[in-house]
Image 1 (cartoon, helix red, strand yellow):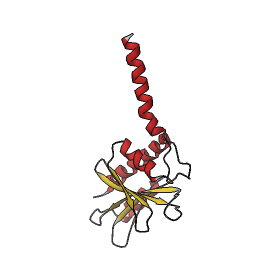
Image 2 (cartoon, helix red, strand yellow):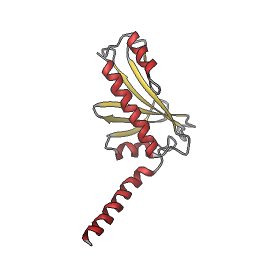
Image 3 (cartoon, helix red, strand yellow):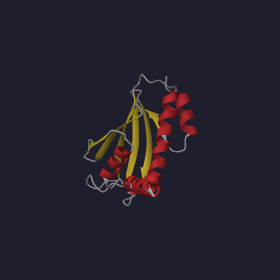
Image 4 (cartoon, rainbow, N blue to C red):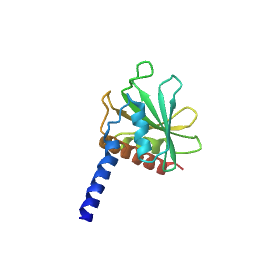
Amino acid sequence: MKFQLLAAAATLAASLATGALADPVKASDPQSVLGYFKEIGAPATLSEDSVGDPLIEVQYYGTTFAVFFYGCNDNENCNSLQLYAGYTAENEISRDALNTWNADQRYGRVYEDPDGRKKLEYDIYTGHAGVSSDDFDEMFDIWTELVKSFEAQLS
């Protein structure tokens, strides 16, 4: 009997824990995006970018990256996100290696600005209704693999 009660309690706890992540992640609701990162234990802060759109800064496994919000109407009701990591000019990669890396990727892209800084980007369209947290988990896994892959190429 105790085992059945314990099993029932564990099942209830698991459903409550996944319930928070069951909510959709929406660019139209920056708090849902912030909540996702907090739920997975990634320190994140919500602020605004230079034009007043939402901006989230995230620290995840030693990399700091930004989540920019796009497709916004008057800084609200955004429909897409961009995961972005920037690297200094001191992080070197040859143009050939950068082009090869880009050619090998399906989802992410890297480019070098005129000052030699490298910029890694990955766009996600959520629409106004959002995407399931399970799908966002998959997209975030793609992002973390992109970051690891690109950082491995830097000297």
